[in-house]
Each structure stands twice: as structure tokens, then as C-alpha cells.
Image 1 (cartoon, rainbow, N blue to C red):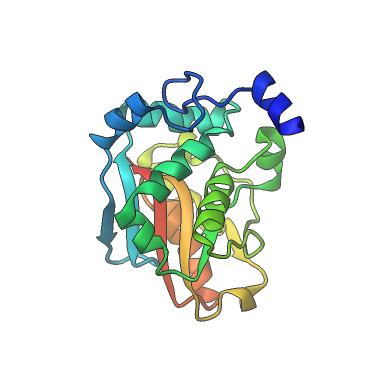
Image 2: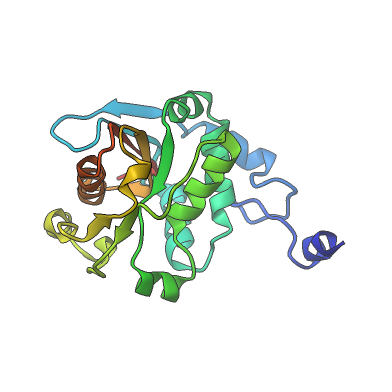
Length: 213
């Protein structure tokens, strides 16, 4: 009964166009996104992670929606982004090869300001649908550094160093880990997080993001 009342007060909308729709993507937006969606799974070199997986270039409507998701109190967009990822067969198959999903954490101060961790919401939904364990109490952000979004690409390279640490290492020893974030720019955050996970005993790490800059 409560769910039905909430649906009337807060009807579900398409995450892209904002029109009321029972699904997270309306039929028109599904068609538009299909044209720009591509499951990119790249084997990387000289990084602490082995693969980078993403679906979009960080521009246009995708850039607009990710920024809204992160900075404009639009947590509901995790449903749209996770649905796009899960409905992609190639990406879904890739994710299922891994043992555990870990979101890139944000500092507790920033979490208090924002009210949610956008990477955690995304990771949690993917983990639930694909029935893969998600652990948010393994990788933590120990230092509240300057947000990467406020720095130049050059400044970002060193900004993530020494910021993250791991706890409960026994949960990831010899495990294949998917590290989930919203966007991939220089790779500094992903690389530093992956370094800490490897030091904690992870066997292999892949980075999954919505988009790549």
C-alpha cells in the first residue's frame, strides 16, 4: 500500500528525458542511447588493474547526467545507469567473471554533505541483480583530499596518492575484484585504489565505469 502511495507522489521517471515512465528508460531514450552505447573492455598496461570497462564517452547527454548524478542530489539516476550496464550482454558477461564488487569510496565528510556515494549505489544495484557480493567495508577513503573534478588532469595524477586504505583484507584475498566508479579520466583514482587492493591480497582487478573521458 505504501509503495503505491509513493508511486503516486513520486512517479518513476526516465533518467534521461525526465518524462514519467514505469521503467528507468523510456522507449525513445533507449533507442537514442543504443546509438552511442558500446561495451568497451580494454586490457591495460602499466596499471595496478588489468582491465578497464566502460559504455560511453564522457560527453553530451551522458556527461550532463553523470554530473547531475554526482552533484545535484539526483541519487535516483543509479537505477538508470545500472540498468544500462546490466542490459548490455557483453558487459554483463564480463562482470560475472569476477568474485566481488567494490565501489570507489568517498570520505565520510563528503558522504555527509552529499548524502550518498554514487559509485556505491551503482555497485550495489549491479551486485544485487547479478548476484555477486559487494563489499563497501574493504576499501575506504582515509583522507578528504581535493575532489578530482576540481583539478586539472596534471594535478589529478598525484592527488589520489596515499588517500585510500583497506580493512577486512581477508574478504578479498585471492579474489577477482571489480572496482566500480562513475567516470574514468586520468585513471589516478582507479590505479591508487587498485594498488591498495592488490597489496591487500586481491588476485586480479578490473575497473568498471559508466563513461571514459
